Image 1 (tube, rainbow, N blue to C red):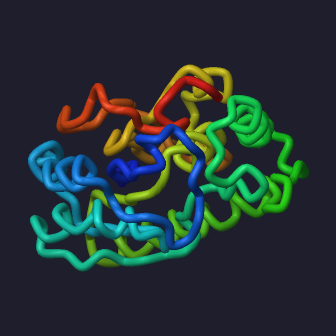
Image 2 (tube, rainbow, N blue to C red; image 1 turned 30 degrees about the horizontal axis):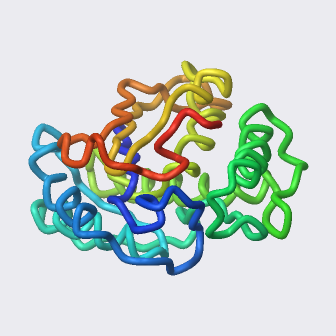
Length: 223
């Protein structure tokens, strides 16, 4: 089984370099729409059998051209949404951004009992994200499909892969940004505790569209 974790296209909050985890959140910018439109060509070698999105507007808009190119209807699951910042929402203050990512990084290192102030525990995040991945994989197997695309969010993807892959660790991910429409390619491993192997980390836009444009905090090596 092959899993493509795709970060959404640019939103205005990314351009403004602020945290924005509101649900349903803002739409794509014009650049974000161009990035989404370029995804089918950027992923032309992938035999995508299903596309899953979060409950946030930007993932629906990002996934639409890709799903259309493969004759698919995206499946929405709330559990793929971004890790919510609560107290630090819409802030670009370096202290607030650092505090947000300090919690996320602590989850990546295994402190799942720590709570995002005003938000969820690490346990909560991994449980909701795991549930969607497991559902998507089961559905793909039942349909005889080999590749699933999940259009999600930068911080969520970075944190989740830190504990669910057998060849990445939290320390690695501190230095691995994920820009808008960057793609992480995973394949199943034999380790039930870390059931995926990272085959490719395309931290920049897979199509190259907007590669030099701001992608918000998740597009940097801040955490």
